[in-house]
Length: 245
Image 1 (tube, rainbow, N blue to C red):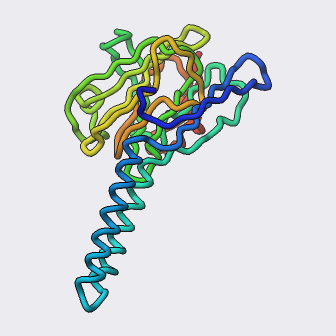
Image 2: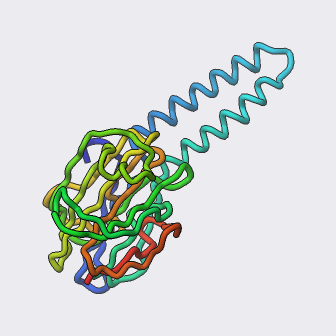
Image 3: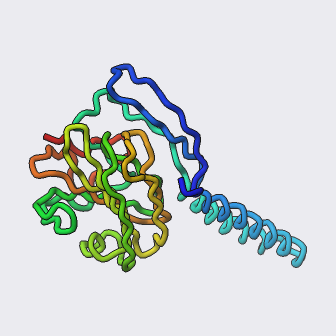
């Protein structure tokens, strides 16, 4: 979508028949490909210079240790693992859209779209987490909206309102609307959203990608049974956040 990712599309006929799984096998973010290629070229070039410029190879070895460590961290940012939600029945289930830890579970007044109280569940992704995002529910994409903004630290409360963000509203098969908000952080300056208005979406399918540390908020209807607590680690497309009424 938008030429931003490499993807293969497959259609799977589910055992239960009702749910059609569209799995987008996202290999690597295109911007990640450029970063990794040019980064490797830079490391090799500096390594050759250091190897040939000094009688001792100590500077080369010191550089190699630091450079390889940093390069491995950057590679970690662009992982897009293919995961399958283990349960066949996904009706009313809300799964974690991201790897990370729960930093907010509270009732808030959602004033931008719903204009009513909602339960906000926020997941903070740190340096070591996978930064691919998944759709939290099966349904149809009603709205996708990108908003420019600030770059406060992602775990701060004001980040959910003031930071650069991408909002995706999904309507489930039962007519329930939920909001999934991708939020940029102090380091994360690039949000990619694969969702398209009018498209059907499914658990197991990638919603988007955020470079570096960031946050994803879910705004769920009052009455949703919440199955996570503050500080709990989440695994994208695996951890059950809650169950809709």
